Image 1 (tube, rainbow, N blue to C red):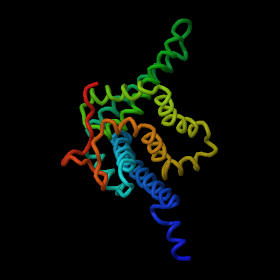
Image 2 (image 1 turned 60 degrees about the vertical axis):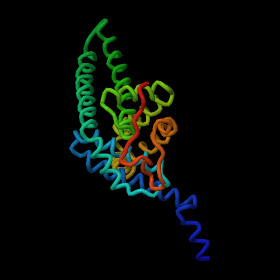
Image 3 (image 1 turned 90 degrees about the horizontal axis):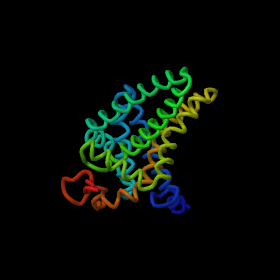
Image 4 (image 1 turned 180 degrees about the horizontal axis):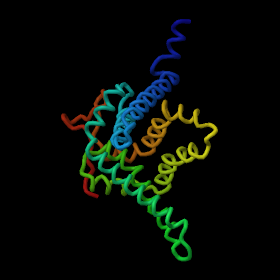
Length: 232
């Protein structure tokens, strides 16, 4: 009986693997929420969370999510905060322009749809920037180029990733009656679950450009933390 119970809860069993994934998602999510509370640090927190998910998916699952989160935060902090602040500026300007266009008449109303288009493109790019930044060590222009590459490689997937990032937030905003439930879900596992799904969607294409890993989930080449894509 004891042996049978052990086989069910063993890390190699289906239940054990599921519990391990849940633990990684929850740990990374809690770290993300704590680090991103000042808002301006949300960008680096996103990159760090994706660092955890990608490291987990490329290893045998035996990782320390708290340690990996801080590694990802340290490695990507400067670049991620620059990209995030630029995105916030675009959002603020876009919201102001949309409010102006809502009260405009005639041809100026078309301007509103142009802003929506710019928003959509920016969202797709930023949705890919965090996982790309977590996986590849490069300059911001090259990371942006690589994000465009992975997004354009599979447009349907790119739209799905953007929808995963913005759709649940829109639902939360409009369904205020269930706000306490949504707040609990976001605080415990919401962001991490989305990051895990997006990472699984991208990992196959990422692996083509990433170095092989050893049994502990680290690059075989000593001292190399992240992959670097060749010029495309």
